[in-house]
Image (cartoon, rainbow over all chains, first blue to last red; front, side):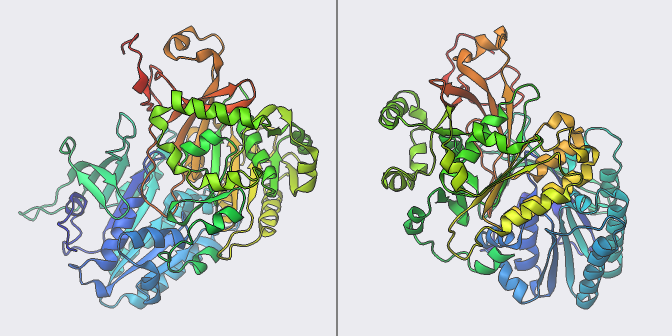
Amino acid sequence: MNRPASLLDNALNLESTQKGRVVLVEDCVETSGAFVLHHLIKRFLSSPNLSSSDSIVLFVAFAQPFSHYDRVLRKMGCNLAAQRETKRLLFFDMLMLECPDDGVEGGLIALYGNIQKAVEVNSSNKNITLMIDDISLLEVAANGSTKDVLNFMHYCHTLTTQFGCTIITVLHEDIYSSGDGFTFPLQMEYLADITIKTEPLITGLAADVHGQLTILNKGMIDGFGSSKGKIHNFHYKIKENNVDYFYPGSRS
Amino acid sequence: MASSKVRTSSFSRKVPAAPTSSIPGLKYGPNGTIFLSSGIPDLDKILGGGFHLGSLVMIIEDTEAPHHMLLLRTFMSQGLIHNQPVLYASPSKNPRAFLGTLPATLVSKDDKSIKSDAEQKDLRIAWQYKKYLGENKPPIEERDGKVEYCNDFDLRKPIEKHLIAGNRVECVSLLDCSSLTGIRDSCSKFLSQLPRYDGNITSAGRIAIQSFCAPQCEYYDKEWDMLSFIRSIKSMVRSSNAVAFLTFPASLLSQSVSKRWQHLADTLLSIKAIPDEDKELATLLTGYQDMLGLLSIHKVARFNTQVPVILDATTYSMKLQKRRSLVLECLNQAPVDGASGCSSSSKNTGTLDF
């Protein structure tokens, strides 16, 4: 089952040797960006061209229980329960995480401690991917203390340089779009090497086009060795086992 | 999580239809989900079967009209008729008094079934296929005509007293709670008393919370407390067999907080009342005089799947049929501003061109 690389894979260009990147998925109420996450889990856990036996996914779930991800990924041909047994998927169920009022010691610091431990144990010669679904709920769990969440993200960011970890997170962008001077999404975008944005079509939802993706890849290196930002833009349609990506108007 | 332990292999075949008939008021849906009726047959059809068990349903209230109460009432009444435990929380001093206003089931059954049949043939030709979505329904209805998956309600008649007395109905006043921990505790206590999911569901519970962020409540200005309350309700409900139904006036929240709430909802609806004398609107929509309001569907729960539900229309008109039962109808002509992405102008009469 070797599909040709999709538009999304080409745009992400994750095959390149460069390690330790930060991917930010921005979505909104109308179009959830969860499918990008599902695609990437599958890619890291069971992609044939990547030497998959030594890639590990740390999944920090605030949004959905394990059974949800398991069933979604199973339809895409990736058995999360089995991957969890073989310790290639480390699943942190954070649905009930509550930080105490006085500080974040019990919550975020403990969580970071667990992540760091897991990364250190597996750091020898392995591709480690840290996924957080999603940052906006992490903020709620931290009782709205944006500073603590940013600190947490900066700590996680150190893992990218130290261990070559890839970080993938979801951020609900429309929360911050009301113009109340939120700097949080800007900081996250600054950290990110690749920003993937899902939006509905301006004309509303349609059965054939579920939305459009805009991908900004800051770390793309062209043939002459200089890096330049590149923007990709295409439409998508989500199916149970796959997602179709296509350029606007290229589908009859 | 209890449910994830049980269902380690999701590809085990579902036992077809046999357990469905044994549980009144519950229905198996796709992807291993279970549906529970909203109390409005049309809304169930639109949502593909009803509310998902374990989901958080949120309704954005209209600022000027109490139409969300219609949905709340039918939701609770439907629960009582199916003997499901109900927890009701509202910002009134005496929430139990609200139970007296719940509607009773529509009695004139023969009359109704003939009429709705005829109606489906005449008016809803394009909707015929929707009938097949509810194929599991007939066997339940036929069983001595008592346990229907979804009843029609007569909004003019109060529910029978014995239904309220005979069921577990808990009422909580949001005014009594200075902080949200009290409500959270009563919700978790309520949910813990429901029978756990052990491969075969026996009963389901309903939590109804009215006007959650009403300004008369003490926690009103603590937006992060409210958010974390909703988040914990969501995760509690997700791991039990219940549906939480929460209405809130979005205009009282700042825009970014309101967006957060909307992200937390599994199913998101909004209600808009129709002003009495809007002449412009009256010329655009057929049957304008009978409309109570507009119901928009922003988000449909997506459990165990990544495929979004794309409805053929997102805005429906709420009408009272014979001034009794609530029906939802497709708009016959889309509003001009089209901001809600309504694409239901299939029956364009052609008198107006946009």
